[in-house]
Amino acid sequence: MAMRKREEDEVFPNAAGIDVGGSSHWAAVPRAADKEPVREFGAMTDDLNAMADWLLACGVDTVALESTGVYWIPVYEVLEQCGLTVWLVDARQMKYVPGRKSDVLDCQWLQKLMSLGLLRAALRPGDEVCVVRAVVRQRAALLTEQASWVMRMQKSLVQMNIQLAEVLSDIMGASGQAIIRAIVAGERDPHVLASCRHSRVRRSEEDIVRALRGNWREEHLFVLARSLAMYDSLAQRVLECDAKIDALLVPLKRHEIELAGATKRGSPNPLGFNARLALASWAGVDLTRINGISEGVALTILSEVGPDLSRFASVKHFCSWLSLCPGTKISGGKVLSARTRRSANRVRQALKMGAMSLSRSDSALGAFYRRLCSRMDKPRANTAVAHKLARMVYFMLKRGEAFVDQGQQRYEEQQRQRSIAALSRRASALGFRLELATTPA
Image (cartoon, rainbow, N blue to C red):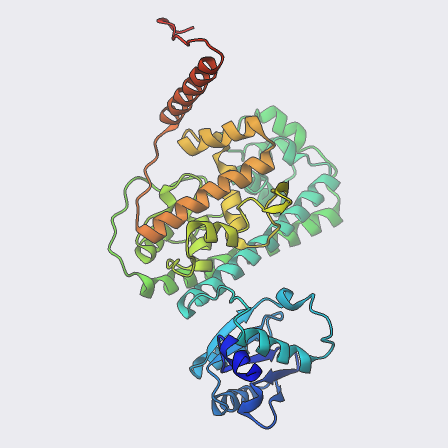
């Protein structure tokens, strides 16, 4: 009777568990499936194929795979190609379970939890999304490394007392690059270097001349030249990634869409192709119509989750996956903490960067961001606006809704009407009646 009850509790009776390692993998199947329910397999491709054949011979249809570094990726791909349903589970779900001190017991515990339906699968997009995601992440890594070489150039300039950062907001802008390349080419006259500035630079030519008077030491000039060469080399690699992304997005164009409005300007790292049209043709909606969502942010969102959000039951599940929703640390009916979880989610970081760009926007979202900044600190306001952007992205991708900006004046008028209604309710509760003045104050 106890055995029958145990079998009825199993959600996935033919499930297997695999503990992934760098040099070998331990796999466990149900006890009744094989005389040796736990086996060790190597990390070579032949070993992975042998493991897949053994799982199929044991009648396994679902596999729980522990996400360990990047070692799980080849195991996942091989098992998925063999027709098995693979669940990528977080190792932290089994972290605090005592008594498991070896890989053999780990894989058995994975198999048991999976059979009882106590594990949750992590988001693993389709192959077409994974291909684009790999190149987009490589591009982001190149941009991060490129920024480190910009800091090295800044350090060399400061060591020579060339205070270029004091007169230019971006030393790698049009004026900054022109001046630095002239310095590397051998120019030392500050007046000639200052003439390279763009006409839109606010600082006067005299201020730039003063900032360009320094000590031209040979070793610092050598480091500056090498850093600029590395910067240019990485810029070329970024262009190669842009060309590859453009080629990967061509077969993903499933929608015929006409774009309205002009492309947003001012992106710090613009893509080397018409990414707005390519992404809109892939997703069916133009995410860049949302204020704060640039082409780079839209590319990050679609390359991480894809245009299909059916894996998320609701917008609340999507925002929870992004770690943008308030926390629910409650004890005894009292809210102990409502802080959002810390997360390295790339979509979350992209949305927060997009929210920061709204500080000077004349849109309704810009007015909303500035209103929150007046009530709370900027990091919390940034997270709240990123949450709002995530909800807009979800509804656009899920329902195909188009985004329409109401404008700053419409938003401010709505807030004014809400304030008047709140004051009227407050006055009525105190026994007074609120009357609006005929002439504005």
